[in-house]
Length: 160
Ligand code: FEO
Image (cartoon, rainbow, N blue to C red; front, side):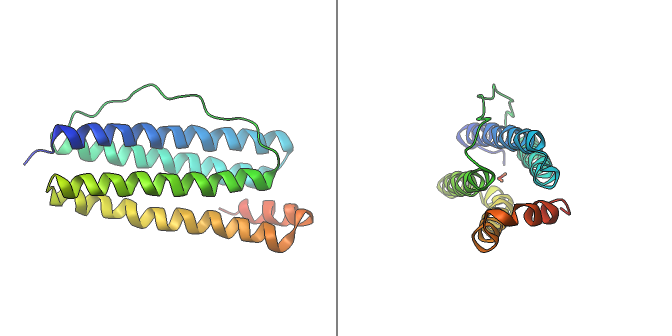
């Protein structure tokens, strides 16, 4: 059974969202590189790479299931933030937003009675739990270490 057009279109929108996320994290990496915070930059570059992998995972699946995978134009991403902590607050907020998008995609797969796609999307549901938890964990470090702990945090994020 091929995936429905509705689902295929929704997958393409999610591909766009994942690629936008990748650009967002790359932009954050540049922000940190400019500040000389190489550990934070390293974390963001890896995050950007992961988002591209998410996009590819969606494209591969759609293509396998007879969908019409498409790559569309990606909107511009922000490039300025108030502080390193504000960047990670943005990461957390953004990941919560992506979780909502994935939930909506799952709702559609259920409405379309496409069990294979529901199964495939379960990976993303679990991934989002991890994504939110990781971002929250970094924010907790800012709360515990305070501004003076920035170099400790940078060192830790360099190990990703
Ligand atoms: Fe692909 Fe960070 O969500």
